[in-house]
Length: 210
Length: 210
DNA sequence: TAGATTGTTAATCGATTAACAATC
DNA sequence: TAGATTGTTAATCGATTAACAATC
Image (cartoon, rainbow over the protein chains, first blue to last red):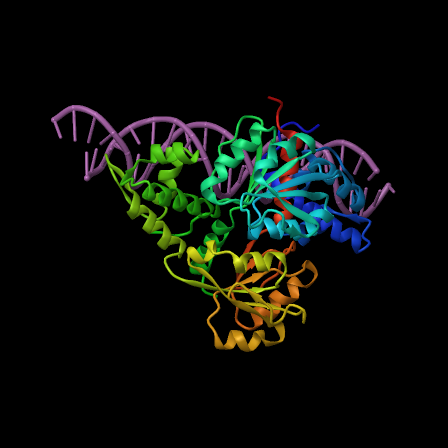
C-alpha cells in the first residue's frame, strides 16, 4: 500500500498516536473520523485521507478500533521498537534529555552522553557518566547507536555531525541553530527552539484584537 | 503593506533572520535572492515572494542589503525588543531553559521560575530562585510577564495554562505533549519533542536505500 | 434491512514555482 | 547604457475539503 507519503501527513501521525493513546487510557474501543477530528481540530475527511495512505484500518459503519489503529500508527512510525540514543554535548539541553524519562518511556533510550569539557567528563547525569568525546569513535564501533542527539554549540555542530556520520551514524536529532549538510542516506530532525520563540513573538504582535 | 501572511511564510522568517545574521558576521553587505536561496535550500522565487509579503526591501539590479533586511525581518518578528519569560515547572526542561543563555542573548529573558515541589522551591537555578507556585498570581500582578513557558507534566498542563490565562497571560511556549485549549486572544507555540523523535523514527525506517 | 461511516474520487483551495516587465 | 535583479502576475503543483458510492 504505502508509496510516497507527504511530510505533511507524517507530521500529523504522532498527534494521532498521542490522541489514540489517550482514548485507549479512557477505555474507548472505537472512534469515528468525525469524533477524532473534533478532538484534534482536524476535518474528518483529512483524517480518513491520512489513514488511507497506509491502508484500510477502518470498518464502514463502525469507525476505527482505537487499540488497533494506535498500534498500526505506532508500527508505521517505527516506534514499536527500542531506539538507542547517544547525546553529544552535556550542556543544558543534553542534560535535560539525558535526565528525562519521557523519551525513555516511549522507547528512545539514552545510552551514552559525550562532551569535550574535562570539567564535565566523568560526572554523573542520571545513571550515565559523561564520556570523553575522544572516545566516541570506539564507543560507536562497540555499541548499537540508532540516533545521535546534537546538543552542541552552533559553531561546531556541522563538524561534529560530519565526524559522527563518518563513523556510520545516520540519524540526527539536532538542537543546534544551524542547517546541517549531511551525506546522502542520513536523516535529520531539527529542533530550533529559538525559532519557535520568534514565531511566537510574531503571533503576539499580530494577533487580531479580540 | 502586510495584510494576512500565511503561517508557512512566518515559519521561514526565523531562518532568514539567522542566515542574514551569519552573513552579517561574515561581513556581507549585499545578497541576491539567488544566493540566499542557494544557501538556504529555497528557490529565489520563494524568497522574493516571502519578503514581498512585507514590502519592497530590495533594489533591482542589486539585491538586498544584508543588515537592512535582517533588521526589517527582526522588526517583523517583533524580536527587536526584550521579552520577559516566566517558566512554570523546574524539571529538566524548565531548568535547561532557565540556565540557557542563548534565549537571553536573543532578547528572551527568563525572569522567574515556579514549581509546586517543596523540594525544589527555594533552590537556585542560574541566578534565579525557584518560587512557590502558590505565589504566581501575586508575581504576575507585580511584574511584567510576556511569555509563560509551560514545562509541567502533561496531565496538569491544561489546568496550569487556564490558571495563568485567568491572570492575564496571553502567550504560551508549551513543552507538554498536549493540545491546549486556550481562551480567545491567546497565542501558543508548541514544542512537542517526542513527536519530532517519532517523525525521525519514521524517516529512519523509510529513507530510500542509497 | 436501515443507518452509519469508511474508502476513494472529484473539486477546491492555497502555496510554490516560473516568467517577465519594471527599474536600479 | 547594458546587465542584473527585484517586484509581481500567471501557471503549476500539492494538499485539503467535499461528495458519494461501497459496505459493514
